[in-house]
Length: 270
Image (cartoon, rainbow, N blue to C red; front, side, top):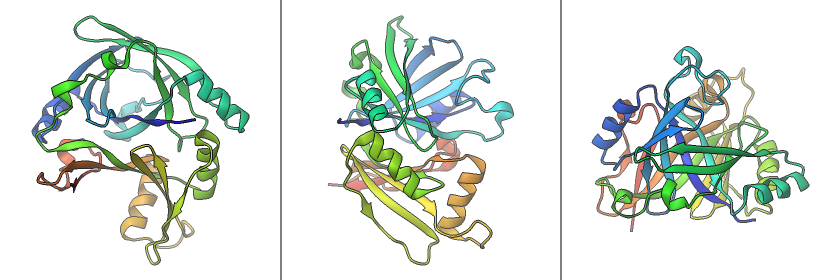
């Protein structure tokens, strides 16, 4: 069953501040509105490839919410990503048949600043290394605006790669095969770096799974140290995102103080 990237979630403590910061980085930011449960509100950064970033902040304490960060212990940054199915229910059923137990479909929605009510369904994954599912009931163009809002001064056009850190690479690959079906997995050993990785196709995006290759008691440095630190502080999940950008645009990692801790890189391509 074909699944493509829907969006990547970046949790922020102050949404207004985040809108200003991402705007200063050359992104066109749209106000999204308040979610149906009243716990969160968001802003969106839409890309030409149809995917988007969701900047999300809490409006009240919400310990029941999967992205709630009590006392801001973990802090701002990536918290999740979603895939877009043609049918959430059918995708969940297919995953169940392959032994992967997603919860759902679960109703979701929000009200835009212009009063438009949006509705969707989600599927919740059984493990933190997996994406959630997000499928529209109202037209997707109402949730993910089209046109000039997808153009960015920094040249960003879409998501080229998502890097996930996982505890056990083989176990994660088994779960992704159950979700996505047969995969053309590319192995890319990095001798001397203390990590193992695998690259999966995800429509026009690639997904890179990274895990430590050595026992946790062994000394670590560089990328291995960063991966271990992420697992210890934030758990499994999105580690970094590379954005496809215009060939004549700026390239390189964006300032972390403006991305609210999210490791973002612009990669120029023709």
